[in-house]
Image (cartoon, rainbow, N blue to C red; front, top):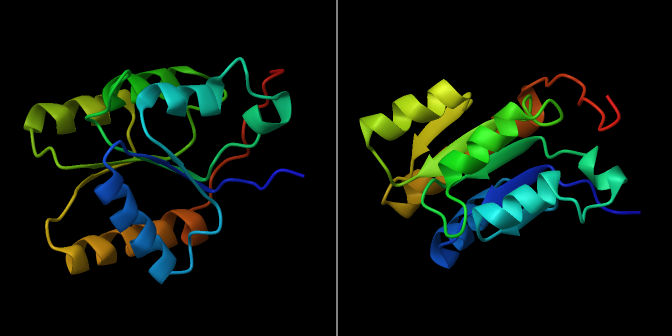
Length: 150
C-alpha cells in the first residue's frame, strides 16, 4: 500500500528544499513529505494522467509551493490546482523569496491559503516552516476531498 503523502514540497532549489525538510524534521513532520523539483512534476503528481486513480484521490494535506520554478512556474501550478474541482480545496502555502506586491496580490487572487517569504536566517526559517507544518497538518480541518469520479 502506498504511503499517504501529507506535504507536497514543490521547490527547485536543493538548498531551500533541504532547509525546509530539516525544519519539518525538527518537528517530526517529515515521514510523509514528497519533494518535487518543478511545477510540471507537481502537476503530474497531483493531476497527472500517468498517476493511478487511487493516488489522485489521496491528496496531500498541504502543498508548499515556490513561485520561481522551471518548466511550469508556481503561479501556473496554483492556477491549475485551484481551477480543478478535485484539488481546489487543498491548502497551498506559497513559500518563496519574492516580496513583490504583484506576486502576493496575484496568488491570493488565485486562491492561495498563505504567502510566506522565506527568511534568510535559518533559525527564523526553521521556526516559520515548523509552525506552518504543525498548523496545516495537526490543527487545520480540511473538507473531504472531491473524488475523481465526481
